Amino acid sequence: MSFDALPPELYSAILDLVPATELQPTVLSVTRAIPLSPVPVHYIFRSIRITYPDQAISLYRRLRLPQETETNEANSRSELQQIAEWVKELSIESWNVDAEVVINIIRLLGMPKLRSLAIWIGPKNFAPEHLEEVFSQPFLSLQRLSLRFRPYVQKATYYQFLKGAYFDSTLSALSRWPESDLRTLSIVQDPLDNAFLQEQKQTFAQPIVFFRFDITSLLLSPPFSSSLTSLRLRIPSRPVLRSLSNRHEVLPLDLEFLDLSTSGVLESEIDMLLIRFAALKHIVLNDCSIMQGDPHERMWHALGKRLALVGVKRAKEREKQLKTWIESRKNARNAPAPTDNPERNVARRAKPGRKGLATAAISLRGASYEAPLPIPGKPSQTKKFKKEKEGPNRAPLPIPGIPKRSKKEKMPSSYSKVRILPSLPTLLSLSLVLPSATEPARHPMIRAEFQEGWAEGVAQLTITRARLRTSAGNGYRIMRVSVASDNGNLSASEGSASSSEERQVVWKTWKMSIG
Image (cartoon, rainbow, N blue to C red; front, side, top):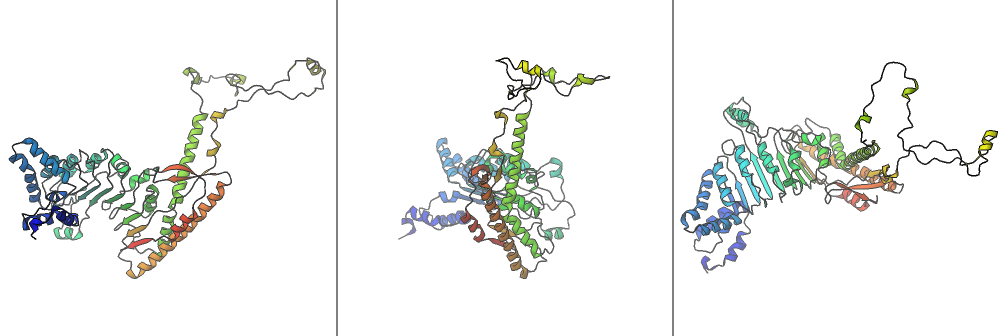
């Protein structure tokens, strides 16, 4: 049987097993080797990879071919729409590709079903205005976005600085998108190679990608706040987490994977990461300024214990926020009601001279009093009071009433004793590269110290949760933070934490990767 007689379904079943990075060249090779075989053509456009500049020009000409050859404009548009629906992945992997050609391809197709987009940005292809134009229209079906920057030049240029050509506008364009299914975001700047500097003998400063990198505003935008699960931010030596320290709320994210390699991350900021991202499971911190020099093994023990007790710190922060909220509500209810005549609130200017009783500290006017309380009838010893008491309908002498706050102004008693249940740790793996001064023979000892500190922290967390269960029976109201379902909202709990969950945390498999 020849290849021409094989059914198209068989070719489709075979091509479905080919990786996406090799699908396009594989289909092109098969169609050239057996041109008469019924190989599905849509596999050529499913995953488009542009690796050299001429490839983008050839693709644009191929897409323009139906408009130039077809006499019927409707047929040419239908073919372009069909090709646009075939495109699922687009990857621009060239530092010298013409940005205008790529923009024309995206405009021509529209790509309504694009799920993955990867772009390499160098000093000779994409400018900030190009990327801003690319992302001016949202890709509603996009699930993965990757931006890789290499802005380094061999000759000194101040064009970027004088023009203010930074890629902050790209992040602003992305933040204006509506809610989408974007799950993976990767923003990577390649580190500058020292060998390249020594070879070129450069002494000038290289261009920077972002002038002001605000990660919090980006993550709280609609396209990322509800769907993002994996985030990679590699900006060499930039403090990408500085904006997180200015925010005290838990970010409403289900982020599970975070890669901050080569960035300016400190050891103290690892705790803040786990506090802000409550669902974080995997952290990658390769080539960061963590544990520099020759750290002692007990430092790894302390780090493991701190990471296990992050839930306690998060609970304390929530208790402070709840206390602040209660105080603000209490102050708002105790504030005096505004009067209709604003002139009454203006204090009179004090006049010189003797003041005496004219400026009394108390006033019986304008105060709302309760009904006077009767004094229990007790016979007086004087004749005067005896005569006054002889009347049959004479009421007892009243005492001045005391202003009393209404029941509506009282704070609910349920908020007087509230405790937040510390959440169980979600971290599963931590990857980092040790300093070169650390000998490889010490790696097993470091892992053992870290795991010992982790186990000690989990044991302390178990005791804390058990103490809160006891407090629940003594009149305290125990609440927990619901991260997955309610985006970090507080929900009432009976105070009975599951001990089986705690045992699973103690015995769960913990992975620490050390390079």
